[in-house]
Image (cartoon, rainbow, N blue to C red; front, side, top):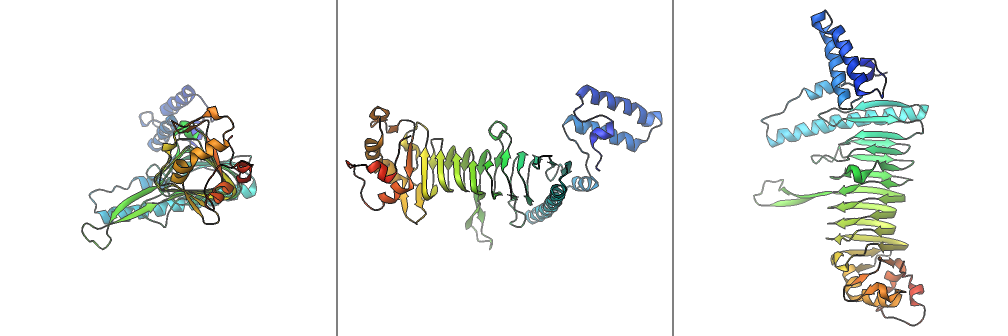
Length: 384
């Protein structure tokens, strides 16, 4: 069993700062070289004390010390890229070890805590809890981790820009994936990372992808290529709950709940709920059959970009421009039960509106005209 910093100082986990400080002082007096103690043991005790002051439970392993001793300076771009490939490989190996460690604990139905990575590469603490959940504390930066149980996480998820081989992938085969208080803690998933949850829900904070211009690989001056690192979150049987979804992201789930969608966002789902006022820049919402899109906020319809597209499961496409500019007043006149909630001058609609798959499918078949008999119920357009 790995000796923790608490063990080194001879205190129990959860001890107060004063208890930890008193234990360090007592041991320092005992092992300091000035008092005939062993210098190596004193260094170990001092490091344990410094680690606990910043909340680090376990000391660095020999591998971590080796990695942290490496210094890179004055290198060419190619050398830096090669260094990053090496680091990505090392992180991926650590994550492979972490996956095997967590799987072994799952099979034995045991609990344990272990530190992976390093200060340089990104240090994370994994804990398999008694209820089968895997707790991750720290930033997940590269490599893959597959776990047969729920994951709760405190930290960010990112992915390396320099290589496809070591892209970040977290795969939950059973249960949910949840960030702990993601909005308060400002946790994010970014830079092309992928999160797959087979049979559960996903609760995250902000989600970012990355799109950038790279110089021509053949060295042609002034020629650039657009590269993208699209961040994927997939929960085919469950819900995805996110805050702002920005710049080259794919969300795919049965139900998607998000605040704002901005800049090249792909959404696939049966039930889509938008709580903010922005749907902008090349957003594509792919709506599954019998599904609906619900806009909740009291926002001006101008917040919905003209570039946004709704694509139905049968392949038909409807521009949000057509809905909001050409159709929305007719829809409101026909379907808002309380006409006082609708202000034609400000293009506001009460507390939001719902667009159903059936209504959109019928829009592509014939012009939208108010009818006298049950058109609202036939097309499934409802004001909630």
